[in-house]
Image 1 (cartoon, protein in one colour):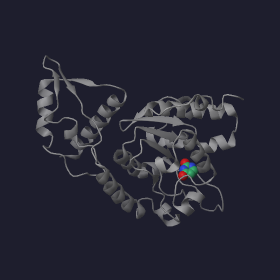
Image 2: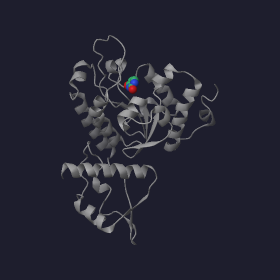
Image 3: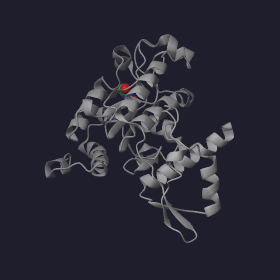
Image 4: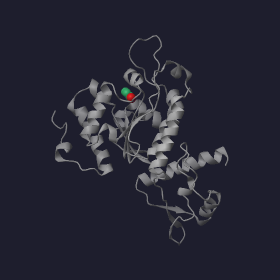
Length: 292
Ligand code: URA
């Protein structure tokens, strides 16, 4: 399979997954096109490949049910989890092993204390993604353990989850270096995030959560490129790799701005995520941060 073909196939899969996440159940497709796709698709599911876990034949399978024989043919797209629990664990362990020795950014590999891969339940329906480890995370090898992380943990508990029952990761797996500085953090550059992006993309593909919460402007830019800005983008679901993706403010922002109005904005974003996950929401939870 040529690289161009593989790239085209990947974008088609992304597009189909995003349609499915937005509720599309059926797709119109010409009979000839369907026949062509069935010819190029391999005939059996390949062994799990972390970099591209969605095998094309899962989308255009030979058994794809044709719902309406009249033209245009309507095809239901069976996009679902394709890795068993064991396969997920193997795939994630392999990915972790690769990340732990990664030197794609030599300046970061030289200065890091630890690679901060990700933590939590890889079978969770809920994933949080931030930008990059800070000094605390670098020291402990775990994302979101500093002050912002402690607030994130409280937010997770308020949603009815525990830190262990969700998955937490960053786009960048190494702490951005701060040459000449003895304290403080710096934002990851777009180049650094781009270089590291395949790791978090593969984490998402392996976990296949039912919802992702993107924390802060930098993370949102890392995933979607420069957009309307977090203030305009937060609170509205996007789709990333076929998964509903909620952009919201970074917990560090809430530490700097402790107004209940700002906490309420983040909380409303999280309430939407809880609704998407189908978790029970109490009246008490619905009312958090309403009083100023
Ligand atoms: N901020 C992030 O975006 N990630 C962390 O892990 C810690 C702080």
